[in-house]
Length: 268
Image (tube, rainbow, N blue to C red; front, side):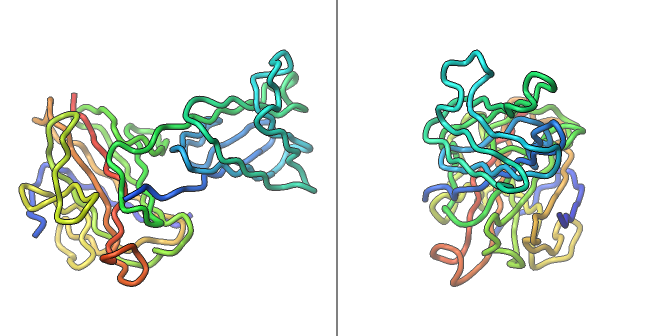
């Protein structure tokens, strides 16, 4: 994956003059472990409507079997697929929110090879429904997920990963903005539907048309673009709304500006 990173502090304020997109999440069966390629753990966090694709990497013959183990009466009820050299890929789209446990039957008793899918409800702050994903991670160890309401303390490292899962927005310029709001909403109202950043105290974090201190010229990179921000002091009790826009006339939904789901960081 090609990543670009930047690290700035959100305390500097600059003025900024429909349904969520479905995403595919990848899990590798590597050795005797399921490894989600966002969380880098056996746990995959998705939004309802998203799909999960397992890819065989190594470790001999695997299965992807729903359930908690051989004593589970519903073992394999949702899905049960081989994952090996002859069947190296398997995909599944959950139909309801909740938690789905799964196992590799050949490597369960010997090695405890298990995984879990956490299916979240639709986003609190939905975007425009374009091929645009904004995931985040808070803390020293990267573990990206689509949770759109999180809590953090001053000084925490916030990472934002912007991707175009199907590649339709790759190489188009992106703009990332942030704005203070009351915890729990309501979200700021922008000039477009599903836009949560406006000119009343907004912050430009990534500007595709400027090369200033905070105006880092950026596009959506194939495989994703990664940005890092240190969360500032003095905001306890408030929230920071963060959203990514991609300018793609004729590609993004009208008016040619793709809006990611919003991310609310509640400062505690």
